[in-house]
Amino acid sequence: MPAPCRSSAAAWRAEAMTTTAVRRHVTGLQGQLTDGEFGQFRALMYSLAGISLSDAKKQLVAGRLARRLRQLDLDGYGSYFRRVQADAGERQIAVDLLTTNETYFFREPKHFDFMRSQALPELKGQSTVRVWSGACSSGEEPYTIAMVMAEVLGGRPWEIVASDLSTRVLTHAREGRYPMDDAAGIPRPLLVKYCLKGVGGQDGTFMMKPELRGRINFRQINLNEALPALGLFDVIFLRNVMIYFDIDTKRQVVQRILPLLKPGGYFIVSHSENLNGVSDALKTVKPSIYRKPEA
Image 1: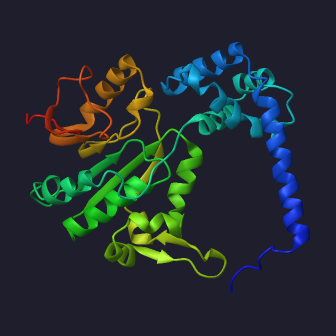
Image 2: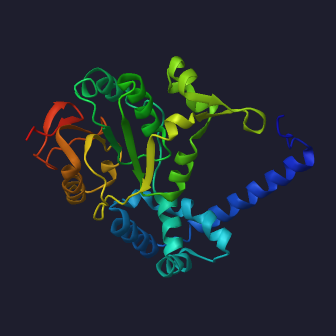
Image 3: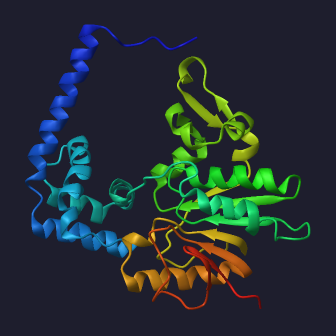
């Protein structure tokens, strides 16, 4: 049975008043982020995540942190920075707030066409096919990969490791529940086959089926630190993350990842990225698709 709708005039006014109060607080705090404080948060994000924040991102940083300052009843960004320095849990919250997580199902579809037509059919034998989604955000990319692998590989064993720096988006990804509007990019046959429509209190959402969710191991991994033991992969996706790195960080990240790619395996970045000046260890197959030479 659908959950009752809070549509009374009193409830609406209360919610509107709360939203207005938050906006006023955010607006007031944005002007208080000094250049020095912005520099502190910029240095923090670079040291923790390798992310380079330009001067143009100052207001974005102020806006994303303002609500958290209100929650903690702090009077300014300097106070919050000191809290972040002293508290590892708060440091993770700040990273979650300041990382960008825009994504959607079947984003840059030519990559999945390539997986379907070439990368996966080339893999002979019955060994487990392994793919790593290295910046999985809220899960749309690994679930897209999972649908393609399920269609192409049939009964052959396969698995996906999906990682992100943000614990917040990983929680969302593990649940595998999305607003129905997000299903627009999923081909209808795959939506019917691999997704469940929400009912009752979950009306207006859909959820990935358990048999698909069970194929994906979601993990928090910082690409700017020594990587955990993950095994070897046939394909690695690292899309829409290197655009936030400077050239030295890009080189270090790719150098760290490449030993985990099997000889003959594919390395896929976004259409807005390339490996020019980053690594010469891979051969270009198509724009944004690279291959590790056979041993």
